[in-house]
Structures are given as C-alpha cells and as structure tokens.
Amino acid sequence: MTALFAALLVAASLQPVSETAYTDLVRANRGKVVVVNFWATWCAPCRKEMPILVALGNRYSSKGVKLLLISADDPADEPKARAFLESVHAPAPLFIKAAKDDDAFIRAVDPKWSGTLPSTFVYDRSGKPVRSFTGEIDPNTLEDLIRRL
Image 1 (cartoon, rainbow, N blue to C red):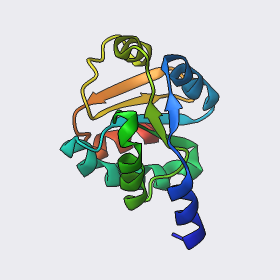
Image 2 (cartoon, rainbow, N blue to C red):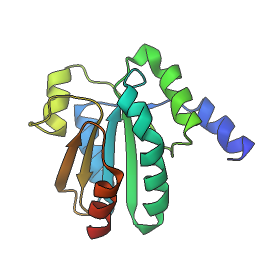
Image 3 (cartoon, rainbow, N blue to C red):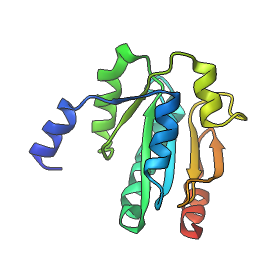
C-alpha cells in the first residue's frame, strides 16, 4: 500500500448508512455481484474473517464483484473501526451503520435477519438477494457462490 493511499484511508471517514441508504447502496451497484458484510470491532469472529473477505473481494473485483463492509460499531467508535479496516487493507468506500431505528434497519437488509454479527449478504448482478450467511463465513462456499454469479 502506498503512503498516499494509507494517508487517504486514515483521513477518510466511514460513510453513514441508514435504512434508505442501504437499499440505495445495493441498487447503485447493479451490474455487479455485491457482497455486503456487517461486522464490528468488538466481534471476534468478524475480525477473524475480515482479512479473508478483503482478499476475496480484491481477487474478484476485476470480475465485477463489489465488497461492501458496514461496521455496526457505535458511531463514537468510528476511529477504532477505521483503524481496523486500515490494518486489513480494506477497499474503500467503507461504511458505518447510522440507523435511527435498528429494527427498521435490520428489516431493510433482510426481514429474516436477526442482526447477528458477522453477517454477509450476497446480491446478484440485478440486485436480487441470492444468499445470506450468519456467523463466520466459509470462504470456499462464498467463493463458489461468487463464481456462479
């Protein structure tokens, strides 16, 4: 990573994502396979799987796969979340959940989702939800799914 890139990443804030913004974010990436991961710095399984997700996202980005990382940390913990993402060389843009109503946010993502972390949601190139994973993801299962889409 270049020093300039590292400096820009450190200086950048995590972009807030509300219920409406989440839907818009997925829609804005139509034409790509979208992998959305919800995580938090206090979640040990989230931290463990993040380097795997980042590597997978980097490997498939040139094939039309977009990795979106959304922190569920408290907004006051944004600097800690940003520092962690920098340490794993996560690709920008980076996001933090900014929901006024957590239940409404969860329903906007997936009415069947309980809000458990980590959770990963995969959308096909038309923006249709294809599969969700709750808990640590099996990287081989995710990679096989991405290849099929």
